[in-house]
Amino acid sequence: MCNLFTEVLKKNGYNVLGFLDPIHALVHIQANPNQYCLLISDFRMNKLNGCELGIKVQELNNNIKVIIISACENIEGNFRNFELLNKPISIPNLIAKVRSYVK
Image (cartoon, rainbow, N blue to C red; front, side, top):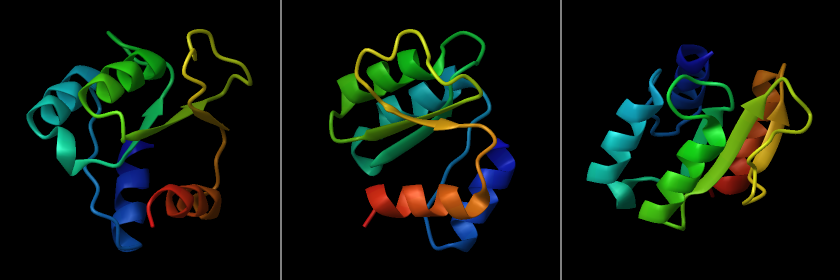
């Protein structure tokens, strides 16, 4: 999913980096906190879930918006009320959602 979303968003004109490991993503964002405006993350991941990653990212730059993708309708730990997109998500819906955040 990460590779597919990355390629589709790039083809639609967005500058995108995709990470399969949340720790690698966090390290990159820590080094470049002002280069990002949107984080799209799966909820279930090893080491950090999507909400934990979103919180850490917003601690670095509160202007970064966060979208969590999950098969669950309600997720634990979404204390910041990150936008939740339920799986399966269609490509047109993904692009529309990104467009609503990145103008």
